[in-house]
Length: 158
Image (cartoon, rainbow, N blue to C red; front, side, top):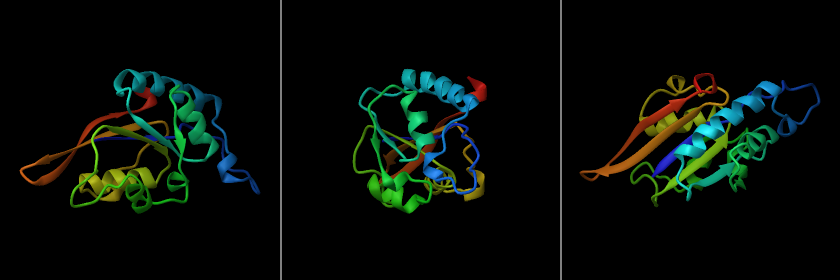
């Protein structure tokens, strides 16, 4: 299975009393999302499941891709890696239960926690920048689950 982690692009700063879920992308963030979406669209299989945080900034990031997606509360800003991995049914022993590709559009620190856990590194090593994509691939080799990093792309490099 390919697990693609896409952090939402740059968003407006939180204002006092503002609902965090309603924060929108900045003009720069819209450009970041468009560039990364164009790159992703060329790479992703057509059958990729796209799952998105209910936050407006994540929705706007995902919409730039132009594919169908589903909102998932398990990807909301306050969610954690355990909730997201349980939702996609990824277990430490066996990895994912199915093949194919899943794209999660969400937030830090959750996306970084997922990457760190699957790669077996310290969480501080996986700080996913705004608008960036980390592409992970899992395989069973000799009865052992192996996960490797296929690609990391940031909007500045496209």
